[in-house]
Image (cartoon, rainbow, N blue to C red; front, side, top):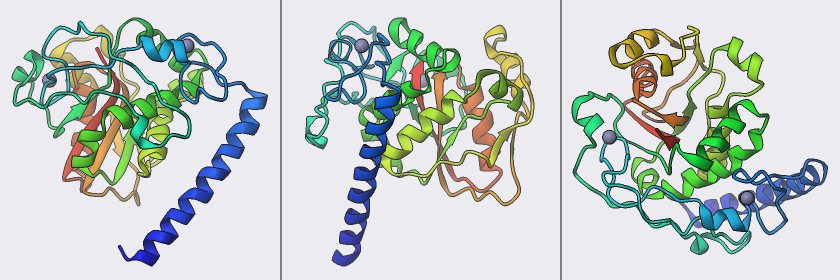
Amino acid sequence: MSGQEEERKTAGKTTGKAAERIRERILSAVYPRRCPICDGILSDGEPFICRECAGKIRFIRGPVCMKCGAPLTEQQEYGAGFQEEPDAGQSSRKVAPPEETAEFCPKCRTAQHIFVQGFAPFLYRGEIRQSLMRLKYGNRAEYARFFGKALAVYGQPWLEQWNVQLLVPVPVHPSRERKRGCNQAAEIARALGKEIHVPMEEDGVCRVKNTKPQKELTGRMRRRNLQGAFQIRAGTRIPARVLIVDDIFTTGATVDELARTLYGYGAREVYAACASMD
Ligand SMILES: [Zn+2]
Ligand SMILES: [Zn+2]
């Protein structure tokens, strides 16, 4: 990139960020932002999570599965969470990077995943689970900002390597979105996209089959339930490197089926970033 180009890009970004900050100030005066963990109101110095909860939450740490990012050992240590000063820049991010391994978790040793690699910053337990439930069912789409940030910070080592060009949130069937009011995966993908400056495809990829909840099914039934669930609208351009975004990674069957669809439309490498891992 030439110096001039870089300057232009930086200048554009600054203006965008400033405008965003103003917009958020105005919005937060009307709708106070809430902590995704305790649901308490956030102060100006707490952009994503309250101070108390920042010290409480724990990221997945230690050696993780090279395929899906699941922890390979028991999670014992508490991660010194999410201490970020609002304007202190990148250096203040304190998340211990996960250890790279050449090992698969027990699930990935038997499953043939077709996505290349994936990660999740949190386990789907306790407070994180409750937070994601409120995001999904409790009219708390604003929590997505926190999860987008957590994915960007925790996932940095992966994201730098993958160099993805498009984010694709796992779509929900229109009837379910109507009932619930928002697609939690899309909210998280939008927030992550803002952090890492990657566009998101929201309307081009859709769910055409109103599948049974995966929770009620196991193994092969999950895969059959999902077959043909996703479709890509004509005219949607799918680049070579795509990142699927979802709220929970369970067996990976959903990510695999969406990846299969994306490979059929020109994607060469499909990755996955999920807010949590069950
Ligand atoms: Zn809190
Ligand atoms: Zn795995």
